[in-house]
Image (cartoon, rainbow, N blue to C red):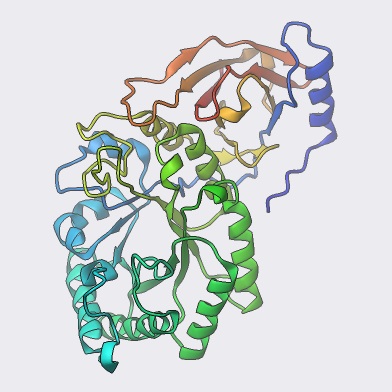
Amino acid sequence: MIVHRVSTLVVSSLWLCLFLSGRLAAVDAPLLVDVQPDGAPIAWRASGFLHSLSPALPIDERIIPLRPQRWRLSPDLALKAGARAARLAQAIEVVVSDRHGYREAGAWPGDNGDWSAWETLVAEVTTTTGAVAPQRRLDIWNEADAKTFWQRDRGRFLEAWSRGWRAARKADPSVQLIGPSYSFFDLADLTAFLDHCQTAGTMPDILSWHELRDRDVERIGEHVASARALLAARGLAAMPIEINEYLPRRFHVVPGATVVAIAQIERSGISGACRSCWREPDGRSNGAQPTLDGLLDFDQQPRAVWWVMQRYGSMSGRLCRASDPLVLATADGGHVQVLVPGRFGGRMLMVNGLSAPLAGWKGDIELVPDLQYAPLKQPVRCPVVQEVVGDGLCVKLPPMQAGDACFVTLRQH
């Protein structure tokens, strides 16, 4: 849980903003952003992708502005496009179980006490993907808590994890291993997984899970804090955490929900996160096509949510403190940028800590409407109403629907 400290100066400016300004309408409690020189540098931790890449598409111009930090690939896709993914992103990870497949009627690791096929498969994936991208990481099994992806009991999965861990390390002693990549955060399940790994000596290098439940979209920060406490209690406080799929289908292409997720992920300080992929209304999977998990339509045109990720990728400098953890703000010298989800539409944005003279700061506001699967050529420029109030700058946010988002930029002239 992130606690935001609001100084007396900020509180004073807040009350001035609410009660002394006649030109800016007072609405619900304003959002507060406090520019701090000691904030953590922005790291674009939420800019990761699942599959959704080919050797040629999307074109680099659709990818590079998003500042991708990681790419999550199947073994086959890693062999086809892994070199490109490694060039575009800071890290790639390979989902070993995608090579095995998830057919209900097929053979599963450990059936009839036979582990040889599974151990051979892991070793082969480790070797072949390492030849394409030596720094790749391996995710042993995807979502073993979901029947779709694991047809045996949990004890069998834990044994498959440990045998896969040993086979991968034998093939490449330096390879980093990620797990358990469960489909949602469950503290009891993660505890049982870590208990097994400590006993077996097969601890992951990176602890991972997915955030795919509707009700958990606003609980990502809470989940990370709980996982860190769990690791610290085992003397594993230094273990990195990754959310290697985030956003449920309901919110997958919704700009406002995307801001809510990426703000928590960025502030949490985890090693990174990847977007999830889903079937679209026409039945096609946007992960099986080079759409950046639905940021682009099937004709390669940007959707509204692409613009959210692009504006996120344009943010620079250091993170600012904000009164709500679902808002993301950065400051970089004479440049402040704020991503706001639609639920705060019509409110005041109060920015404190700007260098004088405050009258020299000019605002720009872009609205990203919730168009779902429709393309969007550009965000919508909005009229800017701003005023110096006390020691801060007040900016009126545009009216928004819950699924919308807006991007506020302040520049010193």
